Amino acid sequence: MGMHVVVCDHKSGMLTSSSLEALSFADDLARKGGKDLVALVPDGLQDKSLHAYNLRSVYTFPAAGDNARVEEYLAAMTALAGKSTPERIIFSYNSLGKALGGQLAIRLNAGLVSNVCGFEWAEGKALYKKSVFSGKAYAWCAIHSEIGLVAILPKAYGVKQGQDPNSPEYIELGPLTIDARMQVVEHRMSSGKTPLTEADVVVSGGRGLKDPANWGLVESLAELLHAGTACSRPVADAGWRPHHEHVGQTGTAIRPKVYIAIGISGAIQHLAGVNNSRTIIVINKDPEAPFFKAADYGVCGDLFEVVPKLIQAIQNGQ
Amino acid sequence: MKLLVCLSKTADTTARIAFDAAGVKFSEEGVQFILNPYDEWYALVRAIELRDALGGQVDVVHVGSSASEMLIRKALAIGADAAFRIDDPEPETRSVAEQIARFAEDRGYDIIFTGKETIDYNSSEMGSMLAALLNLPFVSLCSKLDFADGILRCSTDIEGGTQIVEVRPPAVISAAKGLAEQRIPNMKGIIDAKKKPLEVLPASSISALTEVVRYELPQEKQGVRMIAPDDIHELVNVLKNDLKLI
Ligand SMILES: Cc1cc2nc3c(=O)[nH]c(=O)nc-3n(C[C@H](O)[C@H](O)[C@H](O)COP(=O)(O)OP(=O)(O)OC[C@H]3O[C@@H](n4cnc5c(N)ncnc54)[C@H](O)[C@@H]3O)c2cc1C
Image 1 (cartoon, rainbow over the protein chains, first blue to last red):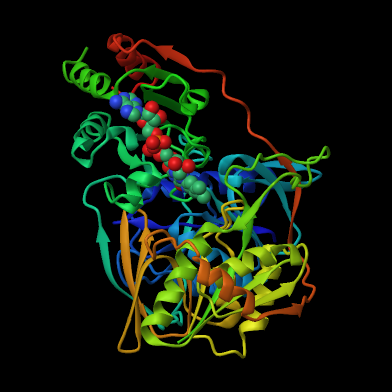
Image 2: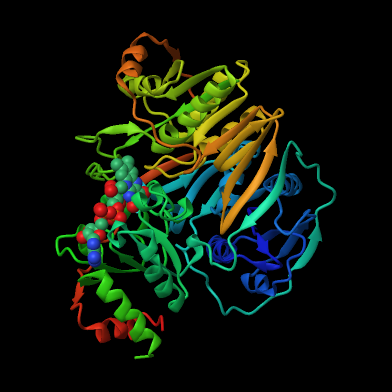
C-alpha cells in the first residue's frame, strides 16, 4: 500500500535532466515515508542510471516515436493506477508534465501540487513547497486526497547521485487504448543548443545592446561558457531575438546556476523570471540600475568595452 | 466559430508580495489586480482574430467576485462579444475548472482558450483539467494557431523547440507567447463594452483536494560584490575560481 510512482521521459534512450530531478525527489519522498517506489517510462529507455533510485519495479509502455505523446502517458498512468492504487505520482513540471498534470488530476480524482521545489515532513505527512508569484514566494501545500500528484519544478530540486544501483523488475503494461483525436505531425528542434530551461549557465541581453547586429557579443560569450542565450521582453517584442528567448514574468522562468545579464535594467517583471538563479552577474553602465540590487557580482561599465575584453581574456586563457 | 476565453485576474506585476501575520493569506491591501497577461494578450486576441476572419462569436468567462467586473469590461472593450461571471468570491484552481466545465458543457464551443498559466500562482493546471472534464483534446502551450479545412494546426512549445499538432475542434487550448499581439482597447471599444451583456451566474461549491498551509518569502540576497570595469582579470577569476565556468 501507499506505493509511489515516478513518471519519467527520455530523449534517444537517455533520461532527461528533469526526469532525473523527479527521480531524486521521489526517492527522497518514498524513503522518508517508508514507501515502495516504482517508475513509469516509455519503451526505449536505455539509461541505467534509473537503477540508482531504489526502484522496486519499472513499468514500461509502448510509445510510437522517440518522444511518447501526452495521450500515451495518460493511458499508461491510468492503466497503472487501475492495477495498484498509487498514493503519490511524481513527475517533472516540464512541457510534458504541464499537459499531463491537470488531466491526470481529473481522471484519478487526485489533488495536484505543481511547481514543487522541495518537501518537509510534518506530523507524519509531507508538505510540498511550491514556487508562486514567479519565484517571489513559496506556498507550503498539503494534499488531502487519497491519490496525490506532485509536479516538480525543473532545476530547483537538483539531481542526487552516487547510490548503489539495484535491479528492479521490468513489467510491460499491456495494450493501451490511446486517444487519437490529436496528432503530432512534426517536431522542430533548434539544433544543438541546450534548452533554456535546462541550461546551467545563461547569458542574456537587453535593450542596452542597442541593435540585433550586436548579439554576436552575447553569443560569443555564451559559446565560451557553454551557456544558453536569453533576452528581455522588449528585445523579443522588437523581433531582435526569438520569443522563446524572452525570460521574465511573462516569458520563460529560468533557474540556472549562473545568469549573466548584459545591458538589462532589471525591471521587476524581468527579475521575476530569473531571481532564482543561484548566482547573478550584471553588466550595466548605469550605477542606479535596479538589477545591481538583485546581483551577486556587478560590473558598472560600458558593455561594448567590458564584454569584448572579457571574451578576449577567456580566449587567451587568462 | 463559437469561441470561449477563460479569464483570470492576477496581482499586478509590480505588486509587493506580502502575507498576513500568520503567513496564510496573501495581503491584497494596496494591490492592483489585472487580467492575467496570457489570457488577455494571447488567448483573447487570437480568439478575436479567428472570429473576425471566420465569423462567429467570442464569449469570455470569469470565476470570481463582482470586484472583477472592471477587468471583464476590459475584455469586452478589446473585442469580446459577451461575458459571463460565475459568482464565486474565493475560487481555487480545481473548482474554477469544474465550474467552467459545467458552464461550457452544453454551449457548443469550438475552441476554449485559457492562458498557459497565471502569473501569480503559476500553476498551468486549469486548461488541462478543463479538457479532461469536458473530454476534449488539450493543446498545451500553444504559440501559433491556424484553422483550415476543418483542422486546427498548432505550434506548441516544448523544451528546445516546437511541436506541431493537428486536431479537429472542439478542443481546449492554452495560450503562450507568440499566439497573438497584445491589443490596447480604443475609445469605441470602451464605449461599446458598456452595452455588451455581462451575465452573472451562481457558483457551485466544490471541495478542494489540496490546501496552502502557509506562505514563505525567499531569503534576501547577501549584497552585490562590485568589480571595476577595467579589472577584467578579476571577473575572469570569479568565472574560473568561484563559479568554475572556465
Ligand atoms: C505586465 C508586464 C509584464 C512584463 N514582463 C516582462 C518579462 O517577462 N520580461 C522582461 O524582461 N520584461 C518584462 N516587462 C518589461 C519590463 O518592465 C522592462 O520594460 C524590460 O524588462 C526592460 O528591458 P531592458 O532591461 O532590456 O531595457 P531597458 O529598461 O531599456 O534597460 C536597458 C539597460 O541597458 C543599460 N545600458 C544601455 N547601454 C549600455 C551600455 N553601453 N553598456 C552597459 N549597459 C547599458 C541601461 O543602463 C539600462 O539599464 C513587462 C512589463 C509589464 C508591464
